Image 1: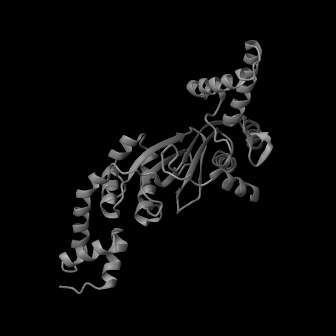
Image 2: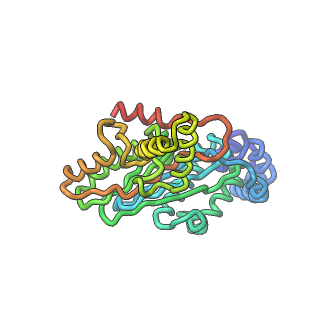
Length: 313
C-alpha cells in the first residue's frame, strides 16, 4: 500500500476538486491508487448529486463563443452555488465546451442531450462535476445569433478566464462590407449593451414585449393621475412619456456610451458609409450572471465598470 502523503492528497484534490479530507479518505480506502480514488470519489459524488439539485445556484459563469467564420455566436450561463467554483479550471473548461456545443445546437434541453468534446453528454458532464466539486450546478440558459454575411461579435465583461466571464453580450451585424471593420464596431456595440445604465429590452420599438409596454403605461398613468390633471391632459402626457421610455430601453434609440451625441442607430448608419455597404443590426443577446435569480446581496455594478472601461478606450 502506497504511503498517503500530503502531496498525494493535494494532487487528488487538484484533480478532483473535492475536499482534502474526502481525498485523504478515498486514498486510504483504495490503498493510495490515484485512479481508483478518483473513481471512488465520482461514485460517492454521483449518489449525492440528486440531493444537491434543490439547492440555489446563482453563481458560476457566462461563456461565449464565435464560430471560425465569424457568422455565428453563442452565449450560455452555467450556474453553481458559489463564485469560488467559477474560478475552477474544470468548471471553466466545461462552460467553454458547452458554449462550443451551443454554436450548432439550439436550446438548453437539446444542448444538455448533445455530446461534449469528451464524448459524454453535456448533462452527464454537469452531473459528474456536481459529483466531484460538490455543488449544485445547472445549465440555466443559452442563445445564439447567426448572419448570412457580416459578423457576430462577442464581448465578455469581468472575464474569469478565456471565453468566460460574469456578463456576456453577442451582437449580430449583417452586411457585405469589410468583416474586420464590422467586428470592431460590433464589439463596441456589445460593450455598450453590457455597460449602458439602462440595459436594452429590445432591438427596436416594434420588438418590445407588449406586456412590458402595458406595464410601463399603467405605471405612468397612475403616476400622472396623482397630479390631478384632466384625463385628456393625462393621456397626452402618457404618450410623450412612453415615447421617452422607449428611447431609453430600445437599443437602436439609445445614446452610444462612447459618444452620447450619437445613437446606436446613427452609429450603424455611419458604419455603412465606412464599409461601403448597407449594415443592419440584426440582434443582440445579453446575459448577466444570475440576473433574475434571488441571490441575496446586490451583485456587482456591471454598468459602471464597463462605462469606466469605455472611457479609457
